[in-house]
Image (cartoon, rainbow, N blue to C red):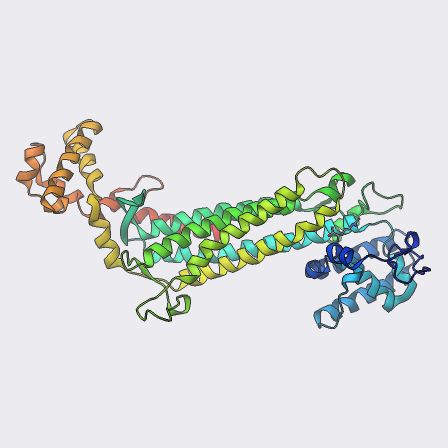
Length: 470
Ligand code: ARG
């Protein structure tokens, strides 16, 4: 705020009224105001101002009495906002000017000294980084909670055999625990993307001022440290025009939502009466107003759907940023809504998935029955022929294909073929082949590193607890 707050025309903005005779038109105010959404980072804005004020005092740029008054005023404003007693005004455009204007009402002219050696350009970059940083931490802990639920399901269902699919056609038996751990890996990569984004984000723009830095003897290391940043940013032009942190958050969020939507899709399929693999609890199912038998997986369907929004939020900000010249452009005010929407959506989807999976019932009987359909152990016969009869795999594949065809023609399972019938295809086959034909034997034999065998799953569960839940 400059001292030139009085103006011939009372309509002109108090913040820059010195150069203006007239205030903005109604439409101008409407398109210009961001307070409707950026009030969401009032706490970060006040924290940034407090750090800046303390530094101005310790550098001797403003007087201690003014600094003390400002600090007290800022605390009061925070209290007013949190008590719902603060009136946000769109005529004051954004959170920065709403806070500063109220500060002037509380502490008088000293308030005008707070904006020394800074600009809303470094201020908004700082606030937004602080907000995204808090969000990255919240997402990380949400994903950790989801992983904990999946790891415990993997442990309790390590021996549960189910069909593994490729092309959504029955492929080979796998264990339910193994399937859960696949998602634990995905969410683990997601977490590492959020953690990586946090590390790159953690440099303070504060003190870059409008774009060029400032002539005041500020200490940017002090404000960086006060706000928990690792360092101040090194280039003032970059600092005020960088929104990579928002884009990185959105891309990591979009990938996470894609993982959540794939999982949601599996839940939808698994809940159908045709599959019947799992049952969602009443608290995560809905009924139909007309069909009393229905039990719909609405939460899963909505998690599946919402990935679309987050992908849209990422695209929206990518396109906004594309081609913007250095340094700040007002286009960048439009960075917040996609990030807020994505953060809310992602948080809700993680919570819904965690809720669904912590109460899911696994139908082991149905899973085992389905695991045996579709000649899912055919590969095990081929592997047996290679191992016991020393056949080249391609020949073994051919023999097995003929056995599958025979079973298909007879309308029976592979293990229902008699030894004599099998020997008409390959005379070397012995009784021993039946040992590999059960779905448990099939899954249990896949002990290669990363494979589906229950003993592997239990080992991976132990490692996952160390890697992800510490
Ligand atoms: N409300 C603005 C934003 O969100 C703050 C920065 C405004 N800076 C400016 N030079 N108009 O980006």
